[in-house]
Image (cartoon, rainbow, N blue to C red; front, side, top):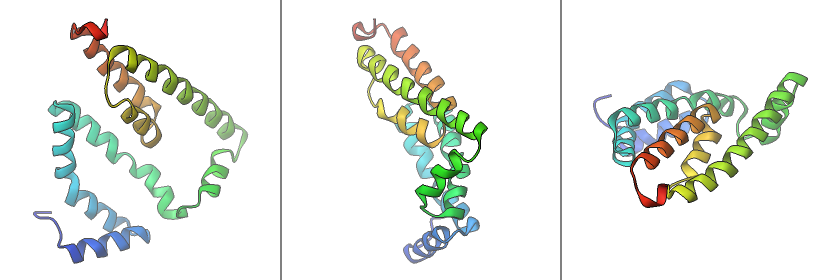
Length: 152
């Protein structure tokens, strides 16, 4: 898309996307992808990291697909998480591991003087632990290697 849609067109796309129109959602993402990427480059201060973060953000479409199909039905979402024994085991394991990560990373972030710790929790909840944990370790290592007295 060469330019952003008009305010009226944008409102129509949002309404269509909310009603489950995947094409409308794709158009919304396309219209704002460059703006989001620019924000990520500014926040992360690295083009490559921003590309990775943008890809991770767009992966949220997998979760968004459930929301399109089921609406904001939190009860159904939780029921699906524990629908079978394997799903229950996987969900429980993920919840326990995520909680341990949040506690550990909060402590580490404070000890190392890392700002915006909450972003890793948001990333964990929206994309997954498999993205949040390595990204936290990466930025933690950068902080350690910076030689800042707070990070030693």
